[in-house]
Amino acid sequence: MSTDTHRAIDAVWRIESPRLIAGLARMVRDVGLAEELAQDALVAALERWPETGVPNNPGAWLMATAKHRAIDRLRRSKLQQRKYEELGYELEDWQDDAEAAFEAAIDDDIGDDLLRLVFTACHPVLSTEARVALTLRLLGGLTTDEIARAFLVPEPTVAQRIVRAKRTLAEARVPFEVPRGEELAERLASVLAVIYLIFNEGYSATAGDDWMRPALCDEALRLGRIVAELVPREPEAHGLAALMEIQASRARARVDAAGAPVLLLDQDRARWDQVLIQRGLTALERAEKLGGARGPYALQAAIAACHARARAADETDWARIAALYDALAQLAPSPVVELNRAVALAMAFGPAAGLELADTLIDEPSMKNYHLLPSVRGDFLAKLGRYGEAHAEFKRAAALTRNARERELLTDRAAACARSIAAQKRE
Picture 1 (cartoon, rainbow, N blue to C red):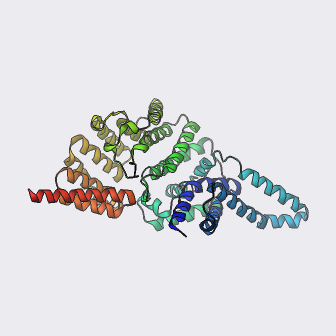
Picture 2: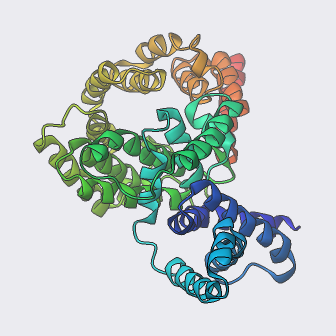
Picture 3: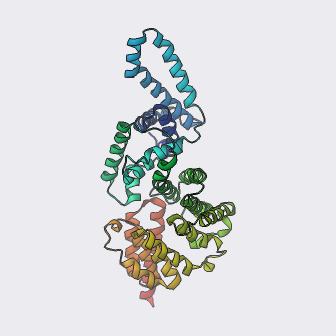
């Protein structure tokens, strides 16, 4: 297979697999079987597209192929065999009706199938970790490796969670539906977490050649908006929507013409999407009016709003951002929050303050292979003129990241430190 075709198939799969699995799950009522059917379609694409070329509508091709596989399963099902014994030739009419209904339904607009898939994967019968991992796998189309990096846990752990989760859902005969009443509230927190993790994977891809995967951001935004309207009195749903809207507003400014990353402080703010910013600020106001100003998502949205309101990077209210991170660290403590708080402290009170906090994270087991820790420390060290140490940190960060664009950025920063070291020696 040519490299170009392989990349094309990978790109199509990333975009289309969530819709494909969701549409199939609605019909077969088994997310494990739905993923298996989708994988069958992918195998067929890998076999045929190198010879025939990628079709004009690859998503429709995959759906049609998966649909035919599903109908084949229907024909071979044990239920049909039992019906045949009971009904004899009447089964032929039943089979025609069943297949016609299946074809009609699978071709319908999938509507909220993706949302149903999220709630199904977030069923209380599963652990929280399994809910998030399974939904990222099915809805986000992520590999187990990418999910493991998002969770900062070993890949085999994630793989086991996914396998067990699908088996548990099948054995429990979990319905493919959006829950109601108390059950809806019970599952909402994990649903919001899943949606935001999907958004983050699109916003800063953990692996691959692209800095961003906009399709995932768009899907997470769509789902976030649906959930916020589904539970209009739940402030954190609006907080998450606000956070994603404001972050997504920077998408066009986050990469240059060549696709290379552009860091926040270097972005052309004229390219930020003001419509998305306004949507985000409105959603944040809605969350605050519902009494949710101190919810984890609302706090993060308030941080994003500080950036959105600053017309230029040097007008950013970093002291307020640091205070918001203090509140977030008390409410939802984690090493990643602490690292972000270190950045805010450095911007508000100087790099030495940020480095002091970042240094406390070095021995955290979950941060051992987290590339952003040495990246952030490298930035602080460079600003302090400690270029040798900064060079080593940027090199380490570049070795840890799986994203090609990010690796290039970190390698360039290491090279800049090396030039500064050479300049110091000449002086």
